[in-house]
Image 1 (tube, rainbow, N blue to C red):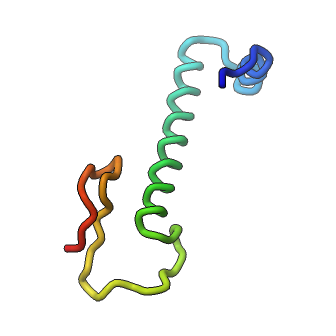
Image 2 (cartoon, one colour):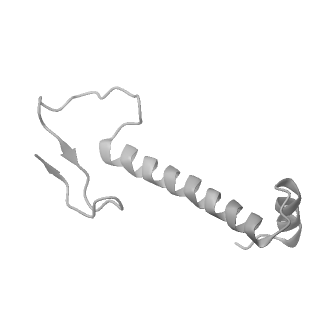
Length: 80
């Protein structure tokens, strides 16, 4: 859904955008934040619990979990 003209004007005013460089910086920073949220959500979904949350049933000692088909690894799920 495209942003309305009024929303764009509000973003420009809120972020004091006055040049193309300002817009680029805003877009870059926004993309970084969005990508970080996506990676964290994928990790939470892959592990089955959120950051700093205890697991109900821990894996045996020495077992490492590698998520499958993630944007970070592109590999399959496996335990090593």
